[in-house]
Structure formats: structure tokens, C-alpha cells
Image (cartoon, rainbow, N blue to C red; front, side):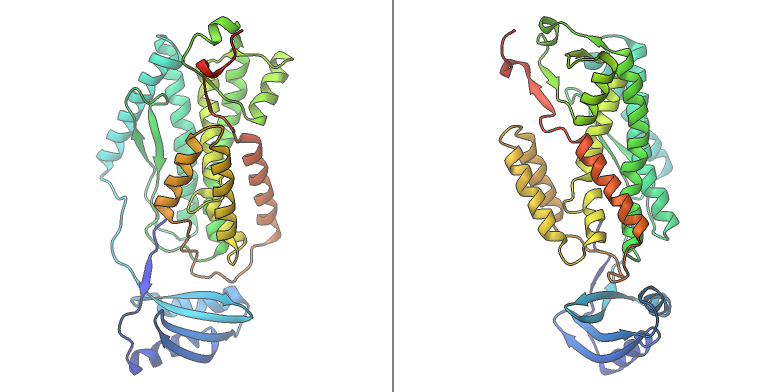
Amino acid sequence: MRRPFGEVEEVTPELLEALRMKVEEGFVVLQSTVGERGVTFRVEPRYPHKEAFSKTLRVLEASPYLPLYRRSGSELRVQIAQKKGGRRGELRPALYALLFLATVITTTLAGYTIWAEGDLGGSVLFALALMAILGLHELGHALMARRRGIEATLPFFIPAPPPIPFGTFGAVIFMNSPVPNRRALFDVGVAGPLAGFLVALPLLVLGISLSHVASPSSALGGEFLLGSSILFMALAKLAFGDFVLLDLHPLAVAGWIGLFVTSLNLLPMGQLDGGHVVRSLMPRHYRKVYFGVALLLLVAGLYWPGWFFWAFLVYLVTRMDHPGPLDDVSELDLGRKLVALLVLLILVLSFIPTPIVPTELLPVQ
């Protein structure tokens, strides 16, 4: 999520007075300051926080400015920011379709060469299941964003030709307007993982039921094994009654990838989905959580080096920061806090400490 606003460059006395009058629609202005961060008003709300901010936002809507409502210690402030122009992520409909078809082809190839071992039907099944999980994850974000009044692109897929084992780098959307408040940020953040998880879980259950126990020699004959999450191990134990090596059905592999992608996105770092959730829950302390989770990933990287890469990539792209919503003061309701606990549970159950295990590192049977 890009930062959709910047600092106000030139502040004349006339502009300062005009902005103060607009802020007065929802707030009593106690002090006006023009500094390095532009124009800031120390305020007291005339109405409940959400209503006060909405009134000010409404009168500034047609202007080139945005209000940012923030809490600083015991003080409440409205900072005026400059809207940024430009949009990103918008593609022609034909290009959306082309990327979709290309990803169907690359995921089918991945299924045919790795996961279904030359079975075309199983390869197509793998591809469609994986596309459904990834697509509905991003569609959940897009539909919730539009429902909350945020401009968002449709999902577009990123194909990954062999030898990339899954055939895709996932799917993404872009938001082209600011998030109005913490509730909207929370809703957009959780909508994708919940949608993807609700598709991945039944596919995983069905896939495990279609899988069968593998002999140690055949399991160790490949180049790597897929690691297990708590949820995956529980489902396998329910199906087979013991912890065993499985020759996974392509649907089970697609479900495994769905859980893995869900857990990656739910990590509370930067502008991942989990980062959105934590940013909306604790606007004053979110960076402590981001860096704490990054530190845990670095420790986990001692067991699986891929976590080093993921922590570095998230830091490189987001600098472990988040622009936040325009209204950063209005609280989340109890229902959303309970959903946050559900999301945390999904992360714990889906997280795979060692996703890929090279067979040469395993003890000889």
C-alpha cells in the first residue's frame, strides 16, 4: 500500500486560515502550527471521533488536501497533507486475462512436472485449485476495499515458469486511494487471508483424504519434502491415525501452498496483511511488533534460510513502516478484536517453520 499523501509545500497565511476553517467543521482548533511536517492543528473533537473526522474529511474532499487525524501523547492533532496524484496497478482488461491464462499454463506445468508427475488431469486440478485459493485471497481484499470506499484494482496473477516449483509468484492488487480509518484498514487486511483460508482448508482436507502413505525409500527419492504446519499434521493424523510420510495428491499440495501463503501474508510486518491488522490494532506501537517478528524470522532462518530472504524482502519493500489510515484515532470495536484473535489462531496453525526440507539433509532410513 503506497503512501497516498505528502507534505504541504507552500503555506500562505490565507491557506492556513482556509484550512483552519475546514478543520473547524469537526473540531475545535486549539493551536495552529506550520513546521517541517506542514500544517498541524491541535484539536478537540466537537463530536465522537469518527463523526468529527468525517465532517472535516467531507469539506476537504474536493480540495488537493487530506486530513490526518493522529494522537500524540495526550493530545489530538489534525495534520494536513497534500494528495498525491497518479495511479498504479491499472491494467487493460486484456492484460489481466493474459496474465491469468499465463499463470494457468505455468501452474499446470508445475503440476505436470512435479506434483502430479505426468498426469495431465491431476496437473489441471492442481492449477485450478491453486488459482482459486490465490485469486479469492486477492479478490477478498479488492471487494472489501471497494466496499469501504477505497479505489482498488482487480487481482492480477504473476506467472512463474519452471523451475519455480509452484508455477506462480502469487497474485496482487493495488489500492489507489487512502484508507479512511482503522476499521477499514482492518477489514481490508483480514478479508484476503480469511477468503483464501476458507478455500484452502476444504481443498486440503479433500487432498489429504486422496493421498496415501509413502514408503521411506520413495519419499526420500525426491529432491525435497514439504514441511508441516500444526493444522496439516492434525489433519493428516485424523486421516491416517499416525504421523507418516505422505505421497500428496495434487489437491493436497495446492491446499498446503494455500496455508503457506496465508501464513506468509499474516506475518505482522510492514504492509503484509498481518501488518495491516497490527497497524489498525495498535497505531502507536506497531513498529515494535514489526521488528520483533522480523527478529524471530532471523532466528528461524537458522533452521530454514528462506526466512532470511523473506525478512529482508519485507524490509526492503516497506522499511517496516506503514502509512496508516487517515483517521488513526477512532477505535476498533470488540467484534473486530475478536476476529483479530481468530486471525492470530490461523497464523499459528498455518505457519510452517521449515517449509522445504532437502532430502539429503535427512537421516538415511
